[in-house]
Length: 481
Image (cartoon, rainbow, N blue to C red):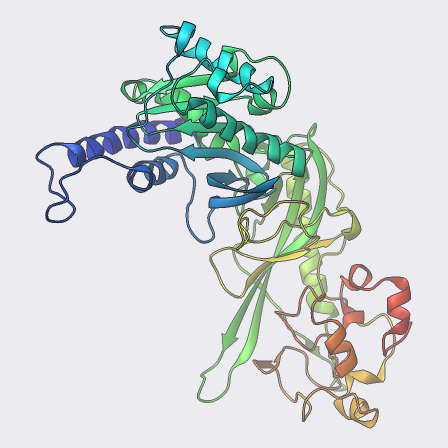
C-alpha cells in the first residue's frame, strides 16, 4: 500500500468524521427518538460514532474476518476486556491496543500541588507514581486518570508477561483527545518514562496533526501485511537479497464443479504455480506470475492406464520458470527450501471466537484463501506439486473390493467416477492415487492437509506424507512401510 495515499485519505476522512459528529451534536440536530433530548455521546455511542469509523479510516477492518478484536479477552490475574485490539493478519501479534472512553470524559489535569502543570509533565508523573505502586488518593492527577493509566498499562504488561508480545502502540482516548503511547512496553513495563514516549492530541489538533496520528495508529504502519499475490517483477519492492530468508515452491489451488447438475458434475481443479518468499522478519510473500491455471489431469496410455507424470512435469516447468524469474529480478539465485523448514501459515482467522487469538500459530501448509470458497494456497517445499507421480509403495487398498475383503472399506460402494461431493474425489477406485481404506480415512480426518480437495486421496502419493506421519506412525498404517 502507498503510505502517502493512505495518509492523505485518512486526513480527508478525519475531516468528514469530525464534521459529521459536530452536526450530530448540534442543538438543532434531530433527536434519535422523540423526547431523547441528549446529544452527549456516552462510551457506547463514542465507540459507534467515532472509534469504529476512526479505525476504518486508519485501515483497520472490524467485524468477522477482520484484523480487530472488539471486547478482546486477556488473562491478567482476572479476565480483562479490551475495547479494541488491532492484530497483524500474518503473525497474529497484537499491534494496537485502544481503550475508548465516553466523549465528554475530561482530558488530564493535576491535583494538589500538580494543578496547572503541563499535561505531558502530568502524564510522566502519574505513570511513575503507578510504577512505584502509588495509590489513587496520592496520585498527581485528578478524576479517574490514575485508573485510566493503570488500565492501559495493565493491558500492555499482560501481553508482555503472559504472551511475550511487545505491543507497539497503545491508545487511551475519549474522542475529544487521543493519548498515544509509542513505546508502551518501555513506558509501563520497564525503563524511565519521558514525554518522547507518547503523544497527546486534542480534537482541534486532529486534522493538522493527522500525519502524526496516522504514523502511530494506522494498520499500514503498525501491522502491514503482505499482498495476497504479487508478480515476480514486484518482488524487489518487498524483499532484498539481504533480508531474504527462504523460498518454497507452492500452488494456488482452485476447485470448481464442471458440468450440468442435472446430468452430473465432476471436479475441475486448476493449479497456479507459486513461490512463497519468506523475509527475515517472518513476512511471507506469494509470487504468482501465471494468470491461467494448469488443469489437473491424467494422461491415458495405450494400454488404458492413467499416469500423472506429464501433468506434474508441466507444473514443474512452470515452477522452475517462476523461480528463475524471481532470481533474475531479485539479483540472487533462489533455491527452494524443504517442506519441514517452512514455519507454517498462521491460523486463517486472526481473532478467536473467545477473544484474541494468542500464542504460536499452528503448522499449516495449506490454508484457504480469504474471501473465497474452494480456493487454497499450498506450500510444497522443494517439490513443485502436492501430488507425487505415483505412491512411494505398492498397496492393495487403493481398491474398495480389497478393503471390503478386510472389512475396512469406506461406505457402501466404490467411487467409480470423479465426484464433487459424498465423497469429494478426483481419483477413482483402483487407481494408484485413490484410497478406500476406512481405518486410514478415519486416522487422517484431522491431519490431512488436502482433504478438502480430495477426500479419498492416497497419503503415500502426497508431498505432505512425511509431515503428516512420523516414521513410527507410517509403519502402523494399513499400507505399511
